[in-house]
Length: 97
Image 1: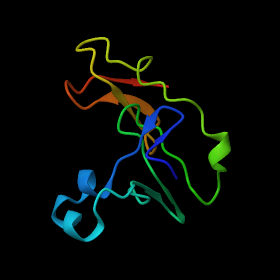
Image 2: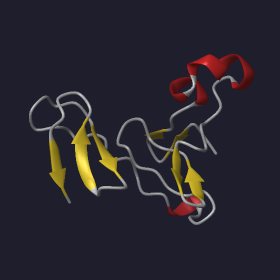
Image 3: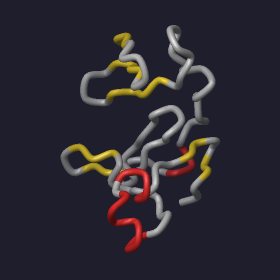
C-alpha cells in the first residue's frame, strides 16, 4: 500500500504511536481503523478509512479533504464511523450524515 493512494495521506505508526516509532518507522498504521474483525488505514486529511480485508485497494475513492472542511474554522473534518457524523477536531463542530 502506498503512503499516498488516491490523494489520501494515511496515518503512520509515528502519528498514532510516537513511543513505538523507533521500532516501526514511518510504516502505514494498518490498525488506525479497527472495528470488530476489520482493520485498515485511515486518511489523516479526510478521515476516510476502510477494512483492508473487506475492500480491494482499487475501489478506494479519491480523497475529499478539500470538500470536507469545517464551516466554522475551515480545518478538515473527520468522519466518525461509529456515530456516523462528520466532526471537526479543532472546534468540535459536528453534523450527522
